[in-house]
Image 1 (cartoon, helix red, strand yellow):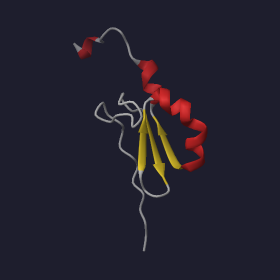
Image 2 (tube, helix red, strand yellow):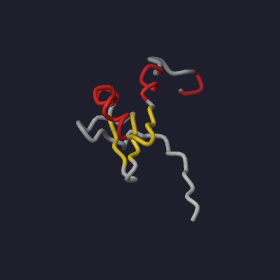
Image 3 (tube, one colour):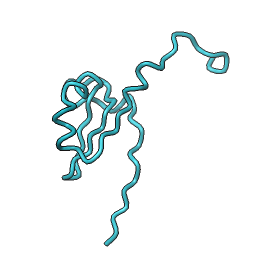
Image 4 (cartoon, helix red, strand yellow):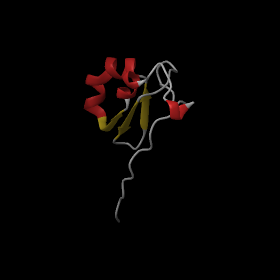
Length: 76
């Protein structure tokens, strides 16, 4: 039997932190096949423990710093 791993889809505003309910920016895939979602704050807080149990960590917290306060002309 062959197992094919598909890349995780990007996190959206509908994905919520399992700890506090804020928008999730980290997806932690566990060896059991389950996953946990965390906001950037709780992802940083629990990072040392998560690295011990995670098969994969999808970190999209970098999107937080790239937001512009003004819209480009093509976005208007």
